[in-house]
Amino acid sequence: MLRLFGEYRAEQAGSLDYEGKRNTDNADLFEAIIREVYEGVTFVAAGHHVMFTREGHPVPGEVASADTLIFDHAIARKLWGDDFKDVLAKLACEPAPARDALLRSLYYGRQP
Image (tube, rainbow, N blue to C red; front, top):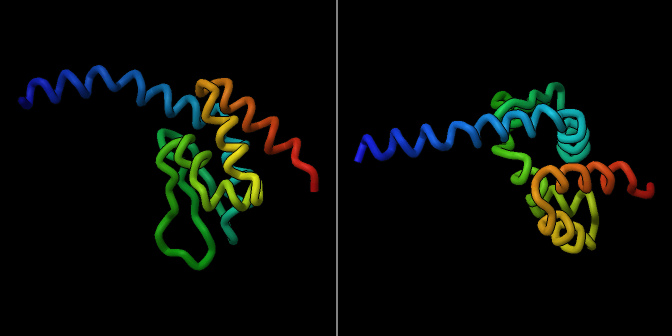
């Protein structure tokens, strides 16, 4: 069983590298979103996870993946208002690279 787990983990290594690249390629976008939805953000770092610190919070915040950030309903509601489910449905229909590009377009294309 342990051998099978080791083989499984080795197969997953490529997907771990992909998630880190996806997060760092979109670090500016994810940072902008995190700074908008959480008060007092002082630092954001993107790697395999997106980590951030906030004033008055001794423990860093963490977003496990790009899709965790994108599809979190509380975050989406703050970004998109009452129509957040429609936006999430559009994003869900796209594969990850196209989803990130669409998110970027929708996020920066919002009307004030």
